[in-house]
Image (tube, rainbow, N blue to C red; front, side, top):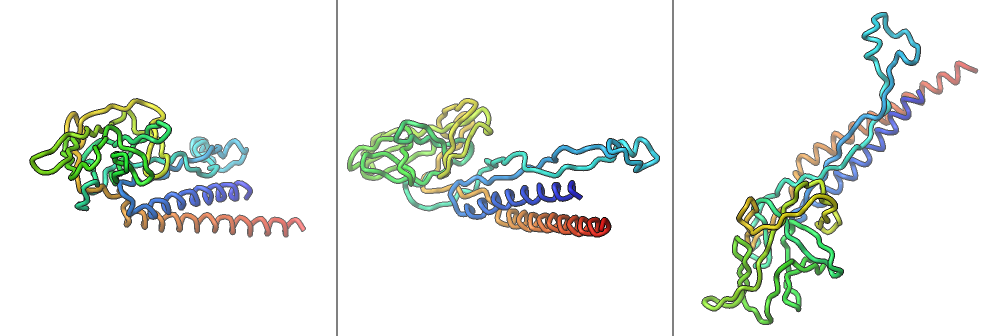
Length: 257
Protein backbone atom coordinates (compact mmCIF):
# COMPACT_ATOMS: atom_id res chain seq x y z
CA UNK A 1 0.00 0.00 0.00
CA UNK A 2 2.90 2.31 0.74
CA UNK A 3 4.30 1.51 -2.70
CA UNK A 4 0.90 2.25 -4.27
CA UNK A 5 0.77 5.62 -2.52
CA UNK A 6 4.30 6.50 -3.65
CA UNK A 7 3.62 5.45 -7.25
CA UNK A 8 0.38 7.43 -7.39
CA UNK A 9 2.04 10.48 -5.80
CA UNK A 10 4.83 10.44 -8.39
CA UNK A 11 2.21 10.24 -11.15
CA UNK A 12 0.33 13.21 -9.69
CA UNK A 13 3.52 15.29 -9.60
CA UNK A 14 4.37 14.37 -13.19
CA UNK A 15 0.87 15.20 -14.41
CA UNK A 16 0.93 18.55 -12.62
CA UNK A 17 4.18 19.43 -14.41
CA UNK A 18 2.65 18.33 -17.69
CA UNK A 19 -0.35 20.56 -17.01
CA UNK A 20 1.99 23.53 -16.54
CA UNK A 21 3.66 22.76 -19.88
CA UNK A 22 0.33 22.45 -21.69
CA UNK A 23 -0.87 25.68 -20.05
CA UNK A 24 2.25 27.50 -21.27
CA UNK A 25 1.70 26.18 -24.81
CA UNK A 26 -1.95 27.28 -24.81
CA UNK A 27 -1.05 30.71 -23.42
CA UNK A 28 1.36 31.24 -26.33
CA UNK A 29 -0.83 29.95 -29.13
CA UNK A 30 -0.92 33.49 -30.61
CA UNK A 31 2.72 34.38 -29.88
CA UNK A 32 4.76 34.92 -33.04
CA UNK A 33 7.20 32.07 -33.80
CA UNK A 34 6.63 30.42 -30.40
CA UNK A 35 7.90 26.82 -30.24
CA UNK A 36 5.87 24.40 -28.14
CA UNK A 37 7.23 22.17 -25.36
CA UNK A 38 6.53 18.46 -24.99
CA UNK A 39 6.97 16.44 -21.79
CA UNK A 40 8.68 13.05 -22.06
CA UNK A 41 7.86 10.51 -19.33
CA UNK A 42 10.03 7.70 -18.00
CA UNK A 43 9.48 4.91 -15.49
CA UNK A 44 11.14 5.04 -12.10
CA UNK A 45 13.13 2.06 -10.79
CA UNK A 46 11.13 -1.17 -10.55
CA UNK A 47 11.73 -4.39 -8.64
CA UNK A 48 11.15 -8.02 -9.56
CA UNK A 49 8.39 -9.70 -7.58
CA UNK A 50 10.44 -12.82 -6.78
CA UNK A 51 12.91 -10.70 -4.84
CA UNK A 52 10.19 -10.30 -2.22
CA UNK A 53 10.11 -14.08 -1.67
CA UNK A 54 6.45 -14.33 -2.73
CA UNK A 55 5.35 -17.53 -4.54
CA UNK A 56 3.33 -15.60 -7.09
CA UNK A 57 3.63 -18.27 -9.78
CA UNK A 58 4.64 -21.90 -10.22
CA UNK A 59 6.29 -20.93 -13.50
CA UNK A 60 9.81 -19.66 -12.72
CA UNK A 61 10.05 -17.70 -15.98
CA UNK A 62 6.73 -15.93 -15.43
CA UNK A 63 7.75 -15.18 -11.86
CA UNK A 64 11.04 -13.65 -13.04
CA UNK A 65 9.16 -11.41 -15.49
CA UNK A 66 6.79 -9.99 -12.86
CA UNK A 67 7.88 -6.57 -11.63
CA UNK A 68 6.51 -3.87 -9.36
CA UNK A 69 6.83 -0.35 -10.74
CA UNK A 70 8.14 2.54 -8.69
CA UNK A 71 6.16 5.29 -10.38
CA UNK A 72 6.77 7.77 -13.17
CA UNK A 73 8.56 11.05 -13.71
CA UNK A 74 9.11 13.64 -16.43
CA UNK A 75 12.51 12.75 -17.87
CA UNK A 76 12.84 15.77 -20.16
CA UNK A 77 10.98 18.70 -21.66
CA UNK A 78 11.68 18.82 -25.39
CA UNK A 79 11.05 21.89 -27.51
CA UNK A 80 9.68 21.32 -31.01
CA UNK A 81 11.32 23.59 -33.59
CA UNK A 82 8.83 22.69 -36.30
CA UNK A 83 8.14 25.92 -38.24
CA UNK A 84 4.78 27.64 -37.91
CA UNK A 85 2.73 29.07 -40.73
CA UNK A 86 3.76 32.33 -42.41
CA UNK A 87 1.07 35.03 -42.49
CA UNK A 88 1.02 38.43 -44.19
CA UNK A 89 0.92 41.51 -41.95
CA UNK A 90 1.82 44.19 -44.56
CA UNK A 91 4.02 45.82 -41.92
CA UNK A 92 7.43 46.66 -43.48
CA UNK A 93 9.49 45.73 -40.42
CA UNK A 94 7.85 42.34 -39.88
CA UNK A 95 10.14 39.55 -41.05
CA UNK A 96 9.51 35.82 -41.35
CA UNK A 97 12.01 33.06 -42.12
CA UNK A 98 10.58 30.72 -44.73
CA UNK A 99 12.72 27.70 -43.93
CA UNK A 100 15.69 27.02 -41.65
CA UNK A 101 17.51 29.63 -39.64
CA UNK A 102 17.39 32.05 -36.72
CA UNK A 103 17.92 35.79 -36.41
CA UNK A 104 20.70 36.92 -34.08
CA UNK A 105 20.07 39.84 -31.72
CA UNK A 106 22.55 41.54 -29.41
CA UNK A 107 21.75 42.49 -25.82
CA UNK A 108 23.02 45.78 -24.29
CA UNK A 109 25.80 43.88 -22.51
CA UNK A 110 26.98 42.28 -25.75
CA UNK A 111 25.41 38.87 -25.13
CA UNK A 112 24.04 37.11 -28.19
CA UNK A 113 20.58 35.60 -28.47
CA UNK A 114 18.77 33.83 -31.30
CA UNK A 115 15.11 34.07 -32.27
CA UNK A 116 12.61 33.15 -34.97
CA UNK A 117 10.35 36.04 -34.00
CA UNK A 118 10.69 38.72 -36.68
CA UNK A 119 8.61 41.46 -35.09
CA UNK A 120 11.03 44.43 -35.24
CA UNK A 121 10.76 48.18 -34.81
CA UNK A 122 13.15 51.01 -35.67
CA UNK A 123 14.79 52.82 -32.76
CA UNK A 124 16.35 56.32 -32.68
CA UNK A 125 19.83 54.94 -33.42
CA UNK A 126 18.65 53.40 -36.68
CA UNK A 127 18.72 49.78 -35.48
CA UNK A 128 16.01 47.20 -35.94
CA UNK A 129 15.12 46.04 -32.43
CA UNK A 130 12.90 43.47 -30.74
CA UNK A 131 10.04 44.59 -28.44
CA UNK A 132 12.58 44.43 -25.58
CA UNK A 133 15.00 46.74 -27.40
CA UNK A 134 17.57 44.13 -28.48
CA UNK A 135 19.22 45.06 -31.78
CA UNK A 136 19.22 42.84 -34.86
CA UNK A 137 22.79 42.06 -35.85
CA UNK A 138 24.33 43.81 -38.85
CA UNK A 139 21.73 46.53 -39.53
CA UNK A 140 22.35 50.25 -39.12
CA UNK A 141 19.99 52.59 -40.96
CA UNK A 142 20.96 56.23 -41.64
CA UNK A 143 18.81 59.09 -40.25
CA UNK A 144 15.78 59.94 -42.41
CA UNK A 145 16.34 56.78 -44.38
CA UNK A 146 12.91 56.83 -45.97
CA UNK A 147 11.38 53.58 -47.12
CA UNK A 148 12.86 50.22 -46.14
CA UNK A 149 12.99 47.25 -48.47
CA UNK A 150 14.34 43.87 -47.32
CA UNK A 151 15.00 41.32 -50.03
CA UNK A 152 14.62 37.57 -49.68
CA UNK A 153 18.41 37.18 -49.35
CA UNK A 154 18.41 39.58 -46.37
CA UNK A 155 19.76 42.70 -48.07
CA UNK A 156 18.35 45.86 -46.44
CA UNK A 157 17.77 48.78 -48.82
CA UNK A 158 16.68 52.29 -47.84
CA UNK A 159 15.59 55.38 -49.72
CA UNK A 160 12.96 56.13 -52.29
CA UNK A 161 12.26 54.39 -55.59
CA UNK A 162 15.12 54.96 -58.01
CA UNK A 163 17.47 56.18 -55.28
CA UNK A 164 18.17 53.41 -52.79
CA UNK A 165 21.27 52.52 -50.80
CA UNK A 166 22.28 49.36 -48.96
CA UNK A 167 22.03 49.61 -45.16
CA UNK A 168 23.14 46.16 -44.13
CA UNK A 169 22.87 42.42 -44.62
CA UNK A 170 20.79 40.13 -42.43
CA UNK A 171 22.45 36.83 -41.64
CA UNK A 172 20.72 33.71 -40.42
CA UNK A 173 22.12 31.01 -38.17
CA UNK A 174 21.85 27.22 -38.01
CA UNK A 175 23.15 24.96 -35.25
CA UNK A 176 24.96 21.65 -35.10
CA UNK A 177 22.47 20.52 -32.44
CA UNK A 178 19.13 22.11 -31.67
CA UNK A 179 19.39 20.61 -28.19
CA UNK A 180 22.12 23.18 -27.54
CA UNK A 181 19.58 26.02 -27.58
CA UNK A 182 18.39 27.13 -24.15
CA UNK A 183 15.15 29.16 -23.85
CA UNK A 184 15.81 32.51 -22.17
CA UNK A 185 12.28 33.94 -22.27
CA UNK A 186 10.81 36.56 -24.62
CA UNK A 187 11.13 34.10 -27.54
CA UNK A 188 14.94 34.22 -27.29
CA UNK A 189 17.47 31.38 -27.07
CA UNK A 190 21.08 31.21 -26.01
CA UNK A 191 23.55 28.69 -27.38
CA UNK A 192 24.99 26.58 -24.54
CA UNK A 193 26.52 23.76 -26.59
CA UNK A 194 27.43 23.09 -30.18
CA UNK A 195 28.31 25.65 -32.82
CA UNK A 196 26.38 28.26 -34.80
CA UNK A 197 26.79 28.45 -38.56
CA UNK A 198 26.08 31.78 -40.25
CA UNK A 199 24.72 32.04 -43.77
CA UNK A 200 22.94 34.22 -46.29
CA UNK A 201 19.15 33.77 -46.40
CA UNK A 202 18.00 31.73 -49.35
CA UNK A 203 21.31 29.88 -49.85
CA UNK A 204 23.12 26.84 -48.44
CA UNK A 205 19.98 25.43 -46.86
CA UNK A 206 18.97 28.66 -45.08
CA UNK A 207 15.40 29.90 -45.40
CA UNK A 208 14.47 33.05 -47.30
CA UNK A 209 13.45 36.24 -45.50
CA UNK A 210 9.92 37.45 -46.24
CA UNK A 211 9.20 41.10 -45.52
CA UNK A 212 5.75 42.08 -44.28
CA UNK A 213 5.15 38.61 -42.82
CA UNK A 214 5.36 36.86 -39.46
CA UNK A 215 5.71 33.21 -38.47
CA UNK A 216 2.90 31.96 -36.26
CA UNK A 217 3.21 29.70 -33.23
CA UNK A 218 3.59 25.98 -33.96
CA UNK A 219 1.16 25.11 -31.15
CA UNK A 220 -1.76 23.00 -32.39
CA UNK A 221 -4.79 24.04 -30.32
CA UNK A 222 -6.68 20.78 -30.94
CA UNK A 223 -3.65 18.65 -30.05
CA UNK A 224 -3.01 20.58 -26.83
CA UNK A 225 -6.70 20.32 -25.86
CA UNK A 226 -6.55 16.55 -26.38
CA UNK A 227 -3.37 16.39 -24.28
CA UNK A 228 -5.10 18.37 -21.54
CA UNK A 229 -8.04 15.92 -21.47
CA UNK A 230 -5.63 12.97 -21.39
CA UNK A 231 -3.72 14.58 -18.51
CA UNK A 232 -6.91 15.20 -16.53
CA UNK A 233 -7.97 11.56 -16.88
CA UNK A 234 -4.55 10.30 -15.80
CA UNK A 235 -4.66 12.69 -12.85
CA UNK A 236 -8.07 11.31 -11.91
CA UNK A 237 -6.85 7.70 -12.09
CA UNK A 238 -3.90 8.55 -9.82
CA UNK A 239 -6.15 10.17 -7.21
CA UNK A 240 -8.38 7.06 -7.34
CA UNK A 241 -5.33 4.88 -6.61
CA UNK A 242 -4.52 7.00 -3.56
CA UNK A 243 -8.12 6.82 -2.37
CA UNK A 244 -8.22 3.02 -2.79
CA UNK A 245 -4.86 2.54 -1.05
CA UNK A 246 -6.07 4.72 1.83
CA UNK A 247 -9.22 2.63 2.19
CA UNK A 248 -7.17 -0.59 2.16
CA UNK A 249 -4.86 0.90 4.79
CA UNK A 250 -7.88 1.70 6.96
CA UNK A 251 -9.19 -1.85 6.63
CA UNK A 252 -5.79 -3.27 7.61
CA UNK A 253 -5.62 -1.02 10.68
CA UNK A 254 -9.12 -2.07 11.74
CA UNK A 255 -8.21 -5.75 11.39
CA UNK A 256 -5.27 -5.26 13.78
CA UNK A 257 -7.61 -3.83 16.37
